[in-house]
Length: 215
Image (tube, rainbow, N blue to C red; front, side, top):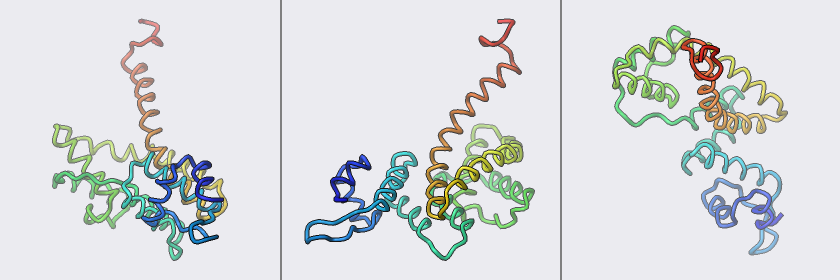
């Protein structure tokens, strides 16, 4: 297909596609003439992934480039590649870390047998957690750390559902792509469903609301 058809099928404007080509986010097409190139379904799939990273994930072009580099790595196990992708799509906070929050994160990882977490800033994921606990401490919620173990146990159920979802795909590239998109969309879905869970549990525990017979 030519770039016009690629634009039509993907919903991405031609100038944006050309920008992604210049930035190396989309591989070049096969030249059919000095001013024309041919694109295939692999270009379409990569273009949709880039748009998901930008539109859903809110990643910068540099962030998208990091994710694609992790996706395209051929000398890593699938487990390690998924880990690299998770690092690339995680956004650590920019504020100063509370030393006590850092200790809380390190203690949490030690309890869970993840003893490699010595310097939380070496990982975007652990840095993000330390930033969140630092923010909690700054507003007087020092004990938020007590929720971490319960959160992890609950989220393992979600993680299993995520892996079951991506396992429906056959090739490693499709699995990685499903994990990237699923994680980004899943983060938003979890926020919304968590609020629904809060409403239901609050109604049961605290009473009130239309479902409460006493109301």
